[in-house]
Length: 372
Image (cartoon, rainbow, N blue to C red; front, side):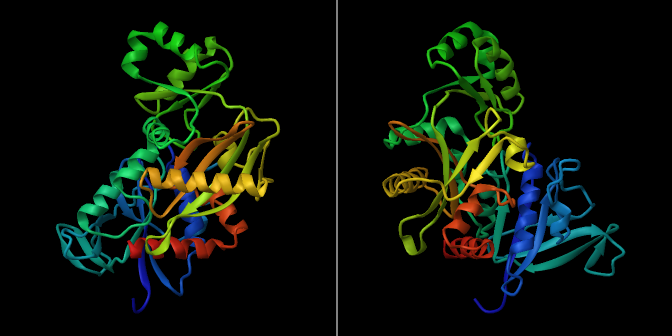
């Protein structure tokens, strides 16, 4: 492709992971190779408005006292109105002297788009919804398609597919808000058969939002209520005793097998589990070790399982696969089809330890999207 490649960096969104998406976008804005790529930053506000954002990495850095966010600046992104064009435009208040003005507004072309990089976490972005929008208007995009994005977002269906593929997952029970409201005793009895401790999670959320560790059944109602604030379906999982290890996956070029990074390990020192504060606010009590101390045989097994899991959900582009390493082998915890790219995130750490720099990871993801 002659000249620079135009990339729309899409971030923010309506989910509770809005700020994490913004922080990830900040990392990509800072690292992307400007000699090869022209970047159009498009933010989605918490209310769902698509706006033209500032191309300023510093604006989106994580700060414990002021989490980054996309605010409504009055602009509106106008996507291509058919698959026959790739032109992106922005509508804003008139008076800037650019574009066609009508009704107190002006419309300005941002040029043709080559690829969209949807760095969106959680519902209304990572779950297949935005991927469906981009499919409808015919734009190439980074990452998994509609099906894999939806499966990866939904922990219940991820587990169902992986279990069918012969990949070990933690035993679980899924409940709905209605079931909890009408049959709390039956749900508690069913949960008790899983043993303690339990982990209670929203079925469709990430970044450990709404997740609780339950050490006594008396703690279960409060944990379910916390999870139900994020989703109408909740998973109750058996707590797995084992090392928490993760690896990154990149799709294969030209239809080849997925590539898998070395492993990273999450070591708990004083925290109960790898929660939101530890993941993104660098809270104490957790140590990230990369590469993890695995035998060659353990690493090969883990990489094979990660590739199988990625293929089982029809993944594309990238993913992070999370495992527990138990005395009897590996158990898949989750697949994240749009893992974080913040400076302390495991996905880039694992690939950097495998020999790819941060800018090279971005290059590869865009190349995979254009190939697809």
